[in-house]
Image: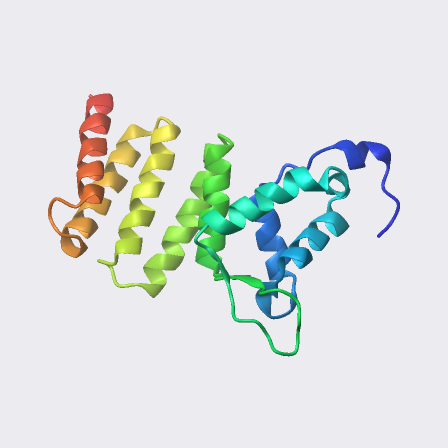
Length: 190
């Protein structure tokens, strides 16, 4: 690594812990990385994290424990270190995660772009009444809603409800949620 000035070292990167963990795992051999390997990747690539290691490492462990996308894999007999963590990675998951991160940061246009790409990829690979198609339709509707494009949001909500009615039992909380969103958005459109 080249020289890093003190301003770069003191500035916290605008990247979530989930994204840091994902990058560490994706850049490791076989998409597997030990906890120590995750720490080391973060410190090697983001100088800010070389200080106060105990503080941010707690958040890394917390994310690994609570995020269902990360999981421990069986110990490799040739590598004596602790069980490595892995992540089920696909383009769809990555786009969905990026869309969610952008939504949290209130960057709804960018979030919408990620969600639409995710939806298009799912539409290619999955049957039209798959639950994941319904989820993408619903999330796309939410992005339009946040952009105050209520008619487009309503259209996506209704399409999601059609899919969910075919693949989820009646009374399922997801169907109920969408029906509520449709009512609220219809009110906004009037």
